[in-house]
Image (cartoon, rainbow over all chains, first blue to last red; front, side, top):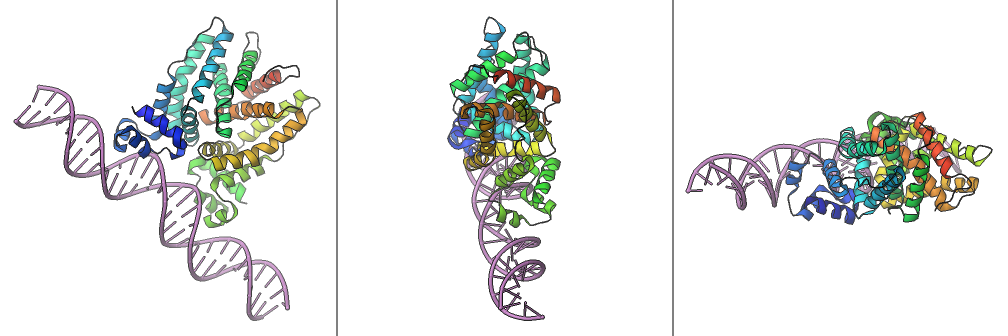
Length: 172
Length: 172
DNA sequence: ATAGTTTCGCTACCACAAGTATCGATACCG
DNA sequence: CGGTATCGATACTTGTGGTAGCGAAACTAT
């Protein structure tokens, strides 16, 4: 499968050295075949991440459990080999590439945003802020250290957002 | 000045299209001159950011005012034309480039980390977490939308970290 | 002022990666 | 068995980071 080859190549070589040529070689197909199926390297990675993440498991009796499990779930996913690198990589490319930013925002972020809005009963801007905080923190740690965030810090992150998004919170 | 030319070029064209050639042209010098002074594009940007940010203005009577002013300061800096793009850009490059990551961590993050440790009396891992949350959130918003974070959301960010880092907080 | 040294600008170049074009082979379908 | 659509391999274009070498300009010291 192309997705598996993509993740393992990114994991081995990092995002920048994981060229489309190498990914294709790892998947046993030709580079042209990849470009027949995806319009760009970024689109391939976004699809790959969608496959790797799957739907959010929105479990939990109350809001606190819901948010806690969502944060831990995404932290665990980002920590999987290759996933965090690929995520940080597309995100990086998207900064200077409005087209890729659109793909990332519409195809990747929006589904999770809508699911969270529905499950938490929060308005769009609050959920977007929630995503900024959680994903931004995880990616910043990953980008600065090259390693996923340790469990203790993930716990702190969970505690922080629970406190801020507690039912009676003011803000925004 | 090279720094001004760098920021304005990044602001106009985005990080990826702001090639070293174009930056040099905007500064009225040759590309080779840039590479005589900086070993890589990333190092140039880091120096440029150091110049643009300057030292943290750690003012405030108590911890809350200190942290609040620090968060608002960095949010304002990231919102300046070109600065946010340049910041997100180097950060992006650093993900796949351990050497640049080292430069970014040692020359850019560490001075602010040490100043914050000193001013807040917090251990290293807590200050690193603080930086991950604040900078990560701001950059994620910038990367996803292309625009700096609005004041209302910056206010929410301030409120969130103040709540989490209040004196009696547990965690980590 | 003049000779020597350093620095800078310019042109050309290399390595490498994204994305495209072409062609031949292969597999699939009627 | 014939036709069609897909895939693989190769070669190519374009753009960017980074380097080499040369000549001119500026600065220093006597």
